Length: 126
Image 1 (cartoon, rainbow, N blue to C red):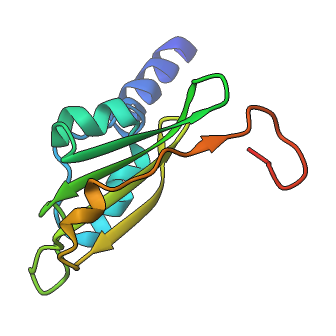
Image 2: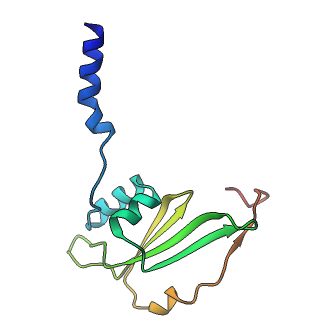
Image 3: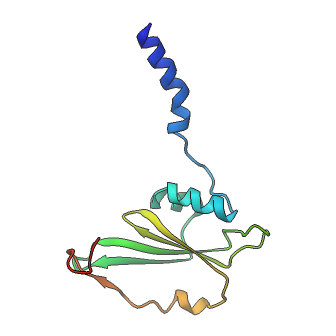
């Protein structure tokens, strides 16, 4: 009887714990909540390749973060789409979502390389 109760509890709880998403909603609050619950690979699978991608590497060349830009994927409450949505990743997870409405397309092409220290030190905590 005890095993049956445990099996039933797990069966009923599993959908809540194993919930996955097969779309990323466009509406701003839902978009942010969803991308923060997914990893980098899952986001790429759902949104496709970003229009712009920049990997941030440490001194050894290991990728420690990334900046991705998508165009017209996030909408404000009034239904107007932001021109650019920037996703900033650290360790494969979204840490910042930036919604941009300027028309400065040159920003996607003029990024300078960034080198991060490979070990934490004063002011370098990661």
